[in-house]
Length: 294
DNA sequence: ACTCGTCAAGCATCG
DNA sequence: CGATGCTTGACGAGT
Image (cartoon, rainbow, N blue to C red; front, side, top):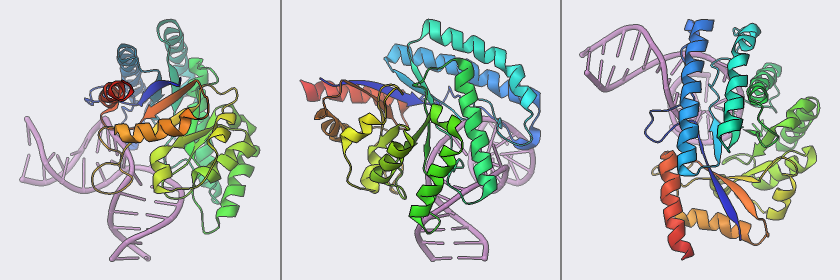
């Protein structure tokens, strides 16, 4: 029997709670940073309460948790001033919640770019994400997920560059995880990279359907050694253009993923539900699954 | 009181 | 070669 723990991210379905409070860069001061951060921290705990109530086992913290933390105008001493709040928050999480915390930097984080400044910015962004999780005292299963990046006219070299850049920054391997995307790098290609680098591979079913390849599902599990319960992304197509996340998740898409996983004999997986209706989508899916299983 | 365009960042694709 | 989509909250300008 396969047990599934569900996950949600960043905000509540009603839009009232978010860990992405921010402001415009032209207004950057420590006071503005602290103001947004405190709002994010407050909503973070409300969201953790919501997860507890709904039986949600994974939460992805928004990248704007500390706005502009990797920007060149952001002073490093500001992080030290926020550190005590994060340590306190981390203790609270450990005491009161049993939840996995992960992060997922935006599309600007590109580790295989041929442009040195893009790579440097990406490393700074990842360093910030790692610092947040480290300071909160999050364990090894607190992964930071990114995509492989661009192709730049030569996919083979783009992959080599990704591998070299991670190898030259070994600290990345502590939390880095990589995901297949809907246009460029297929599940097969990302899985190969993950095996080479010994970082976990996060399989996204919707991306795989838009950008298909052949791969072994058993190989995915091996990449998770020591990095917690294998994590997958599930979403359904929204109306209109392809690639847009739907409001909810179809139980057909869920069943498709489960069929892939079932044969492997795995006991437990984490399923990040990427749907606009967030916890409501999880609730609805759980109700639909009950019907399927009975 | 509201709607609308703009904002740190990268990439590929489309016209 | 310039605009657009990915994604999302804040905010200032305009109505």
